[in-house]
Image 1 (cartoon, rainbow, N blue to C red):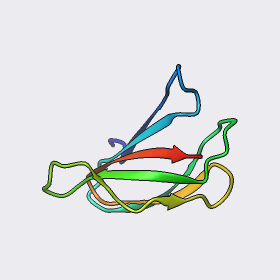
Image 2 (cartoon, one colour):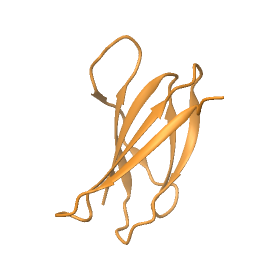
Image 3 (cartoon, helix red, strand yellow):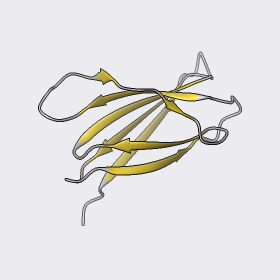
Image 4 (cartoon, rainbow, N blue to C red):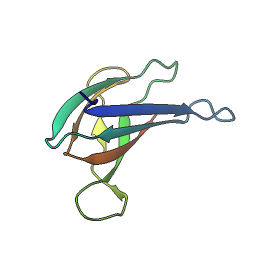
Length: 88
């Protein structure tokens, strides 16, 4: 059985408080997921960009407020790509 989602993270070596997370939702149904980031910087929200449906354009959606320090709950639609950028 193939994974329903794949998540990648990157850290900018020249600006260590810049983190980017890419979540690829492969399943045919949406899902709400929890994301916890281990980082010395306290981030208050996530800038949320999404690619879904038939439009091939990455679109900024509503920012996601942290539920706890460096922890968020994010809704991901079916067969979508989310680019999540923590904001201090």
